Amino acid sequence: MSNAELKYLQDVLLAINDIDEIVGEPKLFKNFIEQKSIKFSVERQFEIIGEAIKNFKKSNTEIEISYSKEIIGLRNIISHDYGAVDYTIVWDIVINHLPELKNEVEELIQKFDN
Image 1 (spheres, rainbow, N blue to C red):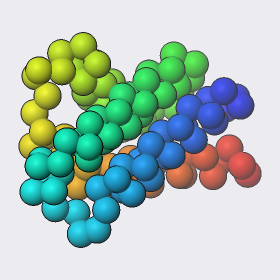
Image 2 (image 1 turned 60 degrees about the horizontal axis):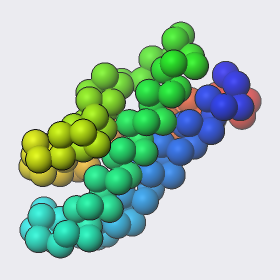
Image 3 (image 1 turned 135 degrees about the horizontal axis):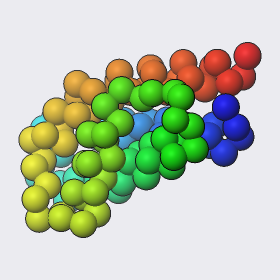
């Protein structure tokens, strides 16, 4: 894995950590949906995650990241078809899928460090 690829993974991890911080604890859908600043900040972090994964995949075709096609697709919807963003899906990703992605990316970064 190259230094550029490592940087893409670090960007993903930083954006996930930022989402966790933005959403806060307890993670409540009501807060997310009612506060534009939270919603828009989370969207921005998903744009970063999608772009970083897209660039990682271009650079490294051997390492697979789970749901990368869907992650890039979400980034494209947020960036280009923003009226079609379904916030219940975004919230589901925050709660149910980001922890898994975070673990996967941390393991890839750890392999690079070894």
